[in-house]
Length: 116
Picture 1 (cartoon, rainbow, N blue to C red):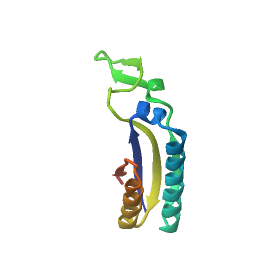
Picture 2 (cartoon, one colour):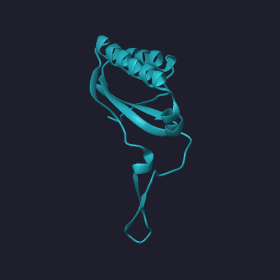
Picture 3 (cartoon, helix red, strand yellow):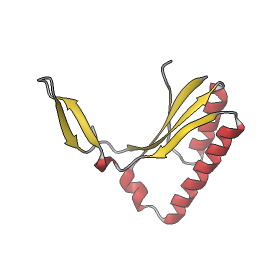
Picture 4 (tube, rainbow, N blue to C red):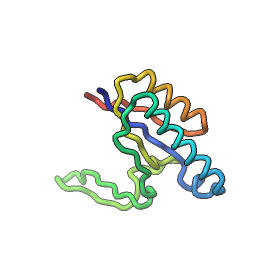
């Protein structure tokens, strides 16, 4: 069985400014996606939103054998990873189909297979 990471990138500030009806629409889309995963025989290992990127801690080599620790995301980007799904599946084709249906409902996702 292979594992897949489904990343959920989104512009945090734009998402926060959306009306409640859009947030509810997003929740319904996620529920439907989870139902699609179950119906396809895929195992949802874990799913979670992430804290805002402003609360991230970045750590980089400092060039002298230590680490430089800074508050905030590693890079400034228009979109941040706001959540993820970790899924196990024997049927990548069906899983990709479920992901495509999820994306078609207005979700932006990044589909990645974990190295075995």
